[in-house]
Length: 187
Image (cartoon, rainbow, N blue to C red):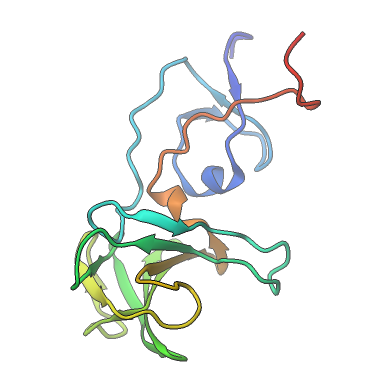
């Protein structure tokens, strides 16, 4: 690697859950060395669960501790409907379809420890049903619980049991830029 190769630090969630054009990584917290100055076209790992691309009403908010309050997913505002079809973001197998407290929930196991969940929804699918990316898997129902004050879809994603930001699967993280530690400009 030449000394002119730029060093870019990718966010941890992106390094763990998206393919990169990196040529070398030394640890999960190390910078990623990116060969060349060009940016490869972004190809999302998954598709959005709503069409058209929805507005994010409330972003992911990881709590400092697993038991603390946070927002373990994103709330998406549908751009159409009713009815509002919910689409599978990737191929998978239904791992749960039923009611939790006062709302319908659908969870899809996409393999590699990745599970996406949607609420409040109604579905005719049952545990074990196979689904394909982009397939209509549920319909958004009236608000329930505390996720949305209006009509929205709560989309959560777990990777090996840990909640992660679902948006890393559908949005281009773009290149990261290293800034001086003191926050000042280069001298």
